[in-house]
Amino acid sequence: MHVEENKLLAPLTTFGVGGPARWLVEAATEADIVEASTWARERGLPLFVLGGGSNLLVSDAGFDGLVLHIALQGLSVRDAPPVPGQPPQRILRAAAGEDWNNCIEQSLKASWAGIECLAGIPGTVGGTPVQNVGAYGQEVSSVIDRVRAFDLAGRAFVELSAAECGFSYRRSRFNSTDRGRFIVTRVDYRLTPGGAPTLSYPDVRRAIEADRGAGGEPTLAEVATAVRHIRQSKGMLIVPGDPDCRSAGSFFKNPIVSRDHFQRIAALSATEPPHFPTGAGLDHAERFKIPAAWLIEQAGFAKGYRLGNAGISKRHTLALVNLGPTGFGATAAEILALANKIAAAVENRFGIRLEREPVLVGSQ
Image 1 (tube, one colour):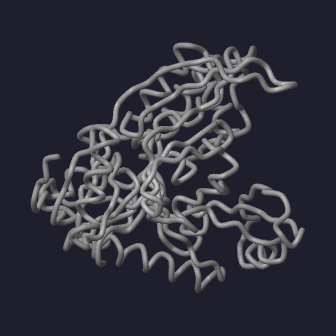
Image 2 (cartoon, helix red, strand yellow; image 1 turned 90 degrees about the vertical axis):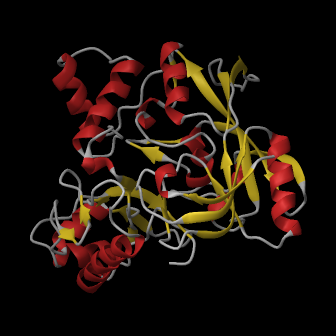
């Protein structure tokens, strides 16, 4: 195990923000994970697990502990156990350090449906079950078969079914009730050979029609291409050299509100808010998801808004971006100041406290 000291974390994130890790270990095997976590525990050091760096904001002071950078590699395929009433499926088994878009490309080449609308999302495999990543009508929870992880509490590797992961909108047990307990090492995705693409979002259908014209069902690859075009148009696709891409993606989660709260928001607006039914909550009352970007714009923040070296993307209100020059960019404090200003304005106008999506690392 090679331990690096005072390793700058900003270059390991898509935001390009943050100070150094007191210690950093790159884990290429499960044995590395066991050894590194033991090393940290014996020294009483806090431990943070870093994947692709796409959904986090590192403190300007960095992280005063051990950062475990997951670099496990490997993809394999096998037949899935048959499920009555469902077509034959395949299991795509991916190590946690694999680039997520490598998995997308594998599924598209083989014409396996289930993750085509998640194309272009940055990061690594290990982060997908943690955040229950989703976009354009798909969530990975719908295709995850099993997650292998190291349980820091029990000091043993475990394999968890999708039901045991506690998935909900942008949540799992890994980032809520058991935050910090598990280190994901592998994910099995159950995909459908020759399955139909997901076309539940109008934006995706319109983008496909613009690319290929109307008529006929698009291929999985055409859907993935359309999704990437949409993401790029919104500054949500990592493109080297594009300053509008130095972000953590969507900075706020789309809030889910009751019908009564939705009606109060509508009464405060000149037009009916865009919304998506999400089904009944635990109290059996109807719920609606409202785009956080719409709430932000209605609260007075337009695309391109700037506060110091932090700003709002010129393409999408939901992305906060690092506008400073490379190496001298925004600080985490500037990003958080802008985020807090936006959240306070939305809460003051609509009574909704926006929830941050990126993980905050270190003392902010």
